[in-house]
Image 1 (cartoon, helix red, strand yellow):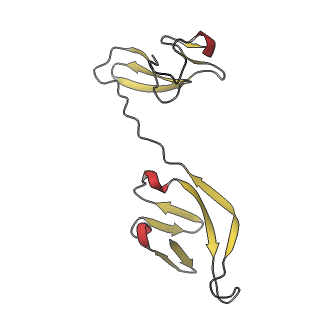
Image 2 (cartoon, helix red, strand yellow):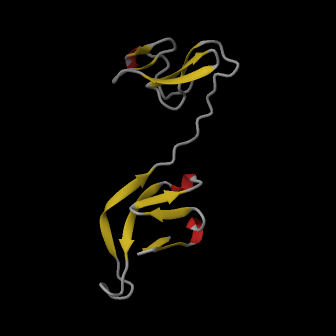
Image 3 (cartoon, helix red, strand yellow):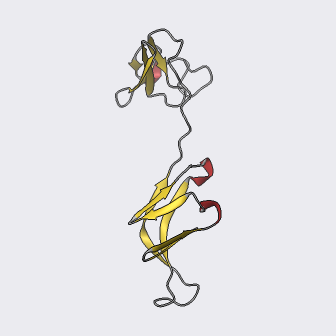
Length: 130
């Protein structure tokens, strides 16, 4: 948990040495998959609320921890390669440089170009995705 008072911020438990507050921003260092979820500000003050009572700010933030991308163009021929995690995206390799590209809305990558999903065999998201 991260507690904040005017001029003083304290982090406890799993957040110790990982989370800090800067004005209105929560900064989390060294994200873990388990950090994913919704975060909000809980205000606790015995001057305004009874002991143990909290008020919750309606604004919240959703923290999404994305899996790291292991795709690389190193050792690959120049060309286009499907993104194994997102059917509507692909990688372009050029002189071992990688470019992550998106297909137009409503299309998915079909080995050489973006196409309508019903033209892609096997269906995107099934075993054997190109």
